[in-house]
Image 1 (cartoon, rainbow, N blue to C red):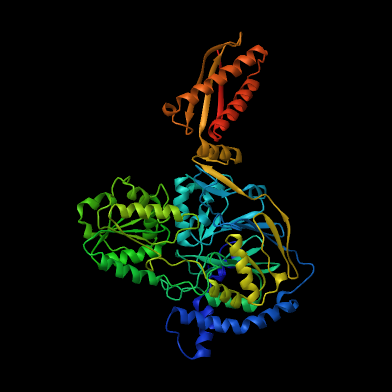
Image 2: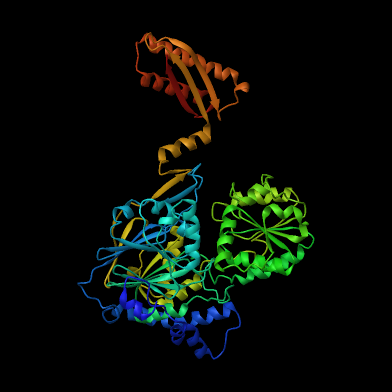
Length: 628
């Protein structure tokens, strides 16, 4: 918006920052002036930036200690409270709540996927208890980018709290798709913000700053309130040759560093990896080589549905080779549709065909882009590998490119799919063999560069498991930030930041809520324990009908086994269990026990001991007594 609109309404999006403003003091210009030469490649560019930043790192640390002049350390100023409700000590489920002088706002609202400890669960979302308790104070939500671990839980929050949402164009488009599925789109308050613009939410001003990631339109935030300025990077990397030619706005981060940044909250996902993250263009070069090798054969590429730059490179290479492109997998179809409609994907006319039409083209004219790069059992690639896909069946000679790195814990799933594809005669290419995947997260040198240009007084690592947070904190120490100015905490911790202190003061309710089908939060620890018990040892059901007046057995007992033993091969064992239950019921009748609960407890305890002695197994024992 222009200045005229800004005066009329200070609560709307304002201050679109121009490119020329950033160029005046940008790190890139300074580097060029100092070195008097242009770096020839990605690594050289970043190295030049790092060298320049390293020269200023120690002086920056000394300046921070002065405090009074740069950070205006007034004792009367109220503290800024930062409350991570997800994303710390874990991968995914990112959500952070900021509070200052009675006003609050949210950053992101993501989900994570279930693991072996949550059998049968569809997704995991944050616990919104504290958010809903304070919804009268929350002025809005800003979103860094459109990945599921940052937007996936938004529909579940909006069911109970219709908070205004501010994000970039593509991110809003992806959020709209999710809200449409949940029938919440018509009432949602969605606002598009461009990088460089500022949103005012209560006593906060949030500036959107463009960053590179594995999805377009990703941003970090400069969050300003009475306590000072906090920079939250979001997920980022420094790519000087991105597919869309939009380089991270490192110049703006440097400007903020010169003015004084109270705290930096930075992405820790790749904090263990040394060096720099490779450019996305490396993958395009690999695709070009692999497509040439696949002449005469069909090509299937599995990747993350949200990696639009990767999909664009696949489409570009398919066009160069004269191939048609089909898309498989619901999330892939949705993202390609939204990205094409909004102009983030350039798809020439007649290149994209429906997956049902692939039977009309010879294999050498087809490229199929699909989900399932993590080996998910319900994904398109998994169904293709196990001949359970309605439209696609493996043809010997097919080239399958898995363009992703397995998320920790998914290695066995991916390996299972790869092995099955190879059994069917496919030529499978995955990241260990060729450069068919690069990360969207910053490695160590990029993380240090961000610290160098931002020059924060305090540092709080975000987004990662404990080992990632600890490693990132170690990088901060290398950059001259004192131990007392670094804080590693967990979900639910209330972080208080002032010009003179950084501390964790208390905890609020934070955790995970399990979504199973249409049920949200109705599956807890007891249900999960039972599910794991059933998965490990199976179940024995003992059913008996008893006369309600005389307490005599009318029919049964009937013993049914599921997941414990195959009945036809264990008839003697089942007969012995039946005899044991008869004995228990007879004793209860003789002793005059008329309480159903007591009878069930005796059956459960004695059958459990008997089965354990005979089989060394512990199946779930479920007595069912029917009164007739």
